[in-house]
Length: 111
Length: 527
Image (cartoon, rainbow over the protein chains, first blue to last red):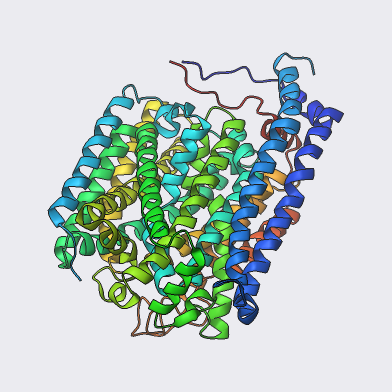
């Protein structure tokens, strides 16, 4: 069983936080996660408000008996799946390597 | 309408309990350390944990409640599931990974990381217990209604006995299995539930030659509401206030999931932040697919069972899915679906109990009462005792709340989680200046405003459908508080922060670097 690990010196964290590599990691994460959060929340609220206050518009039949509201509901499912896939891909490609490099540096005491 | 073979229903449920108990006994050998008891040794893979999350999240309210809501109200039932699903993006993008990197066992670990320990842990544990208890009550209340339908037990005393049996089995799972055993119960249950729903969905689709539009047309024909069942606001469109109540509910749903303590605790059962990310991705795929199934099942029930029959059956709206199973596959399919529905309640209740007991033992007993001096063995012993106490409270509460609206109680838990927990979680992860006073104000203001607005809402008093229909002390017009209480939680966190000078730059640096890189994160237990 291994649960103990060596704790780095507190100064290491402050130096790392100020380093350009860490800024780059933060930028790479926040640059994706923050705008995407705003986007999906706005898209969801739009769906809720249209369903609540634009009933006639949402009841317009589009394909057979499938109306606009049902299509937008499916759209919410599709965008949720799509955004999940995009984020996992972005994180695997652009965030993980940067985080890993900084983690190794700290654990090997090179900061 | 009394359908099915009650004995067969009980036998299939018994088989589920026997199999899961055997598995729980097998996996839980050596379940003595705190990490094993609370976090399953952090040894689950992302996919396993994703399935377990789906098992934890797809409660009886989701399965029976949403299928029933679609069957009777159509589109408005779908609105629920969209909110429940989109909510997972908050967890994926903002919460799961940094939480895994900075905490050990509970939500309070993260909130108290760079704050003064005792007050923050006390506040966070209080809100954990309140949210978990509301959620627990909803599940146990649902058990009563389910029993009425599936076992033909209509006497409240006998229903109470069945609720007690469910509660006792759950306590055994938690005591013996800890988080590892509970996780396996959730994985098995999720697989059964999703497979069962998939089979029924396919069946309905084959009957309609995979023509969704034809299914919708038949549903509109079968419903007394006609094509209104395909359009929004059949259930919520009564007045301006009921519409606004719905908007408030939608906010609670989308912001609540990432603040539910039993959901957050699941992220500690995997070895890395990357595995936490993959768990959420798996959970989103499974939960999303399941909600698409419930849409087909709901409209299928409208067509094949009919809204009147559903409304008049002993379980009311919750009986749409079981009745559809009976129409499609007779007594055997009904028994399987019933067994799965019981298993659902069992698994969700076990997850809630372990979360609440961990929070009491780790945050209140060890950190506040014992100043962090308790040994892991002592902590786990207290957690086990707490689990028994919570289990007994859940049984008593479930018997008292028997017959209450399940979906309403769950929506309440989401509203409290969104108001009391989410603001402080996001601030502590992403706002450098955030401090102890901000955390406390945010939790306390979010929690009390949500609770006060619920008590004085038309859901509790002053309307025919209220919990207490004979008295009227309602002054808040909305049945869900989130529209007001979520902004209050965020505002109080900001106000508390800027009126206090406290900062801990060293701790903030440590938290941010650890959250982003995983340095010093708790490792998996290796035997």
